[in-house]
Image 1: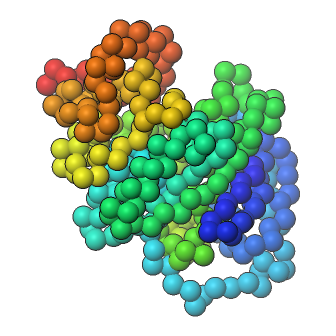
Image 2 (image 1 turned 180 degrees about the horizontal axis):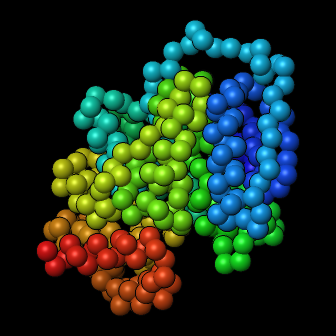
Length: 327
Ligand SMILES: [Zn+2]
């Protein structure tokens, strides 16, 4: 797995372990035995669940890496894994309530739907506005996510009926691309907003409480933990819009669209729209055009049913929407 981070003119190239083959990886930057053990465990667990065979990864630490040290540095800062959606925003609201002003750690990549500034300027504008209005700092991390998870690299090693996208979100992508910049920005805590439906759910395992707990110490002096784990998606949207309207107005949740904030016909748009209506939230407050959404509604529901009824995560979310609607 390869990732590249570009922050403020600083470029860091990472060559992380391939998960599906027997490999020795020479580590030339500072790593600690316990941290390496943690990552080795992730490789083993992921390949056991998804791969045709379990990985056999060994890390070889170079002398140069052993000699480095950074005890004198402080790691007081917090980074929030930030995608602009309801989880990120509610987690941000909770942190600000506790007087913690985090860095927003935002991943982006070329030709990556929803995260390419050439195609989705809207998301980047919203991020810039929220930073300006709430006096927040942002760390934008560039990744070649699409190239990393290209079919030819992963498909041959995956079990039957395991799709690349499931494999991708079973790996701790977000936290692993933030880790390389923790020293530079004095980040000691990385926080993720995980919703209840992700728990025990293969499709979005990267954001599950199980994954977060297994990586609670992903690096020396760095902790990783999550919030919102006991809240369902619907409750997250409700609390965000009813209690934190000044933050909710920046919501960016649709990743199926170019040069627009909401496509108004995908499963994400549908989930948010129905939740808004259940709790009397004005869709316009999040920039959603209700008239167009309503026009598209029959086709959108049919399409969602056709595509997602067997998806465990969406099934849980929809089940909850139904229950909230009749309460
Ligand atoms: Zn959409």
